[in-house]
Image 1 (cartoon, one colour):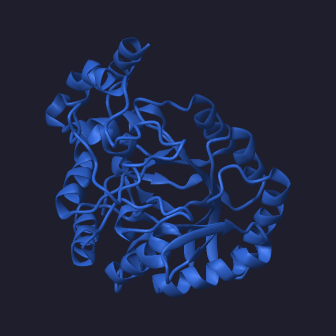
Image 2 (cartoon, helix red, strand yellow):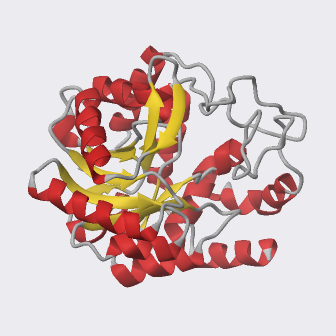
Length: 330
């Protein structure tokens, strides 16, 4: 049993999760866009992925976030396999909205119809090996709000049918998130948040509407893991090697984009206080930032899983440390 300080509630649903979730994008392996650009994090070892999930469970992590499109279904299958026999011990979140060719591991155009949402949910349940999804999330950040309202109502149908327990939108737009928040069973919004890129408007919405703030990119696509310096370069097959426009942390040569590393160095001593690693300190900042936050760092190895799960033991930064970081980054 986790102590209260290590758990959080998914909004108004009453669903309790560990304060730390694990994001399962990377364990989906390689997949590509229509032009052949990588959308995954490179090749993976499925056996290592399963061991890493088990290490997370041993470390107190009960919340796992994936998407149907990660590895064009592969992430869901690996996660389902890793959680076999432990389904009732965990909370599973997945996403829909993108279509894909699983045979070619290729992303296809989006589909925002309620009919596709139902088909996608059925397929996700099969890959995950479960009879329900705890948090079902719209994966199209810039979807039209009118279309999203229809999808919100479709999600209410899924709740009534027992196929999902709650739903959310993965978007960085508070206005769009507010559309889903009108639904009785909306539990969260998934959005970008890390010590280098705050999201005050979204956190204010979560506080106002009693939504969980599920935080993607909590380690800034790996920058806050401590694994990268000015000479580092990510490998081929990694989305960071040929980053799309929205990925600001890395440049076209696969190296860290200018400006980020000095900011990290400015706050390193605070983040690594109390014996924390840099990554653990970055997660501690997120917990201190709001009581609604649930960061979901990615992982590919047992070592990464162990380090991330270890952040739970150290807990959040103090209010004084938060203020000091604000001053240094201002």
